[in-house]
Image (cartoon, rainbow, N blue to C red; front, side, top):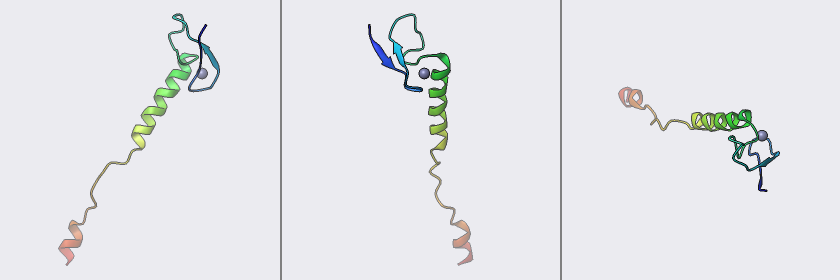
Length: 59
Ligand SMILES: [Zn+2]
């Protein structure tokens, strides 16, 4: 029997076809992981160049 560790909460999870949330232990842990991914993506700052248009105008 193969046992993996749930990436979200760290409990042992039996790797079997019945467990459709593997490698997670539950649907909740799977959703938490997906949420973390989305949050991480959101946290990446957009590469916006500094707006120096006004500075050029004042010179
Ligand atoms: Zn878990």
